[in-house]
Image 1 (cartoon, rainbow, N blue to C red):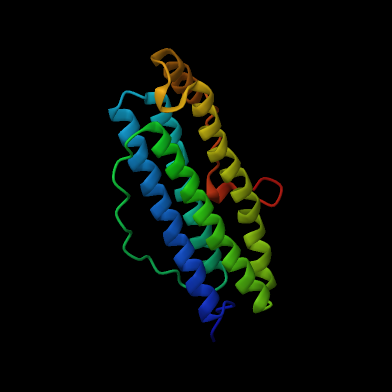
Image 2: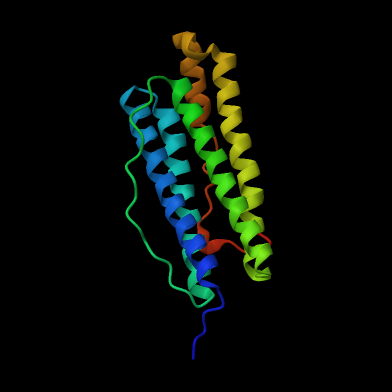
Length: 183
């Protein structure tokens, strides 16, 4: 008996998004390594944690597809972009990546609505909310860097920004611990 409750189109879209989340994890890991190499250990730590969060998102997609009777497909992951030229380019890259991810999330929501796949539509609402938070976070990084002076920031301002991000709470939840009350 076929127990797959996903259409082939939805299953592929969810698998593609799982892979997009894995790619995002690699991008943020790469940016974190770049920041670490430049001496920004706080910013690097922040980006490493964000990389783990993106990986957790990919696991959520994987688990959902499996739970609906499908089989997610792991594709090859494109290489991350070249190292950023500056912190501004790094933070702009984070923001751009989140906006691109939001667009992909919305396409899956539209597809689920079109196919009247209410379970997937409901599942995707967590990611819609998450992307609001992700874009806000990325935008606030850009704002904080601008306040510090952007690419012309003093060493003292960059030190303070780096320390602030180092001390940001490590609140990355594990995907397998997510519930309706605690997404």
